[in-house]
Length: 113
Length: 114
Image (cartoon, rainbow over all chains, first blue to last red; front, side, top):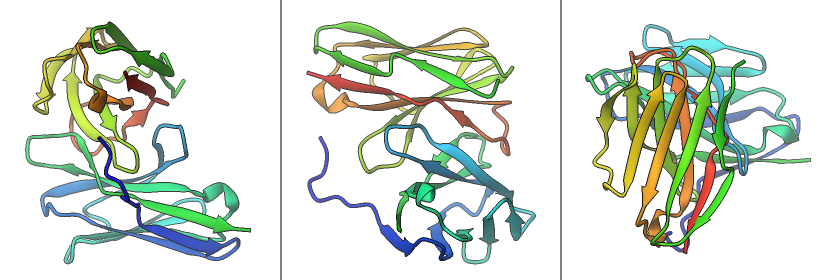
């Protein structure tokens, strides 16, 4: 069954502000990382990816930063819009012969108009 | 076509029923996946098919039985489920089962076991 009182970490921002969502990963052998956005009742949607030989990658209004030293990933969203409200998951691909995406715990982004 | 299509969108079944979830993609992807997602939790991997062969089974109970009839289709057969199996079941596909490829997800099947 479900855990009563279980809450996703939530980031609440004002429309137009920049958002930063963080993720810690555990496997130093992971070599590929993706950020997904999941809106209520929908499947995860690809936002941006980064490989372990890079520190930063930019897309449209989004930037992913990878710090391999501390095993930390972040997603920066510029000029956050109400349509950005969703749950954001980081996912890693573990290069240990078990090649399938493993998801982090997720962060809910709430954009206040 | 960059879609992964799942049917049905919603399913309610009794604990003695047998039902199947279906997933289809026409992107030429050779790896397909089933994930299970409980409320407020991340998707959890269940099965991986690579070139139509089962390559990963994450110790999923045998009441869940996957099938890959061809490179475009993936099924999940359900039998004698428990109420705690109620969840969103997500299908995904990627170009290959090698690392470093994006997985595309379907919209999921919301399963309720009564």
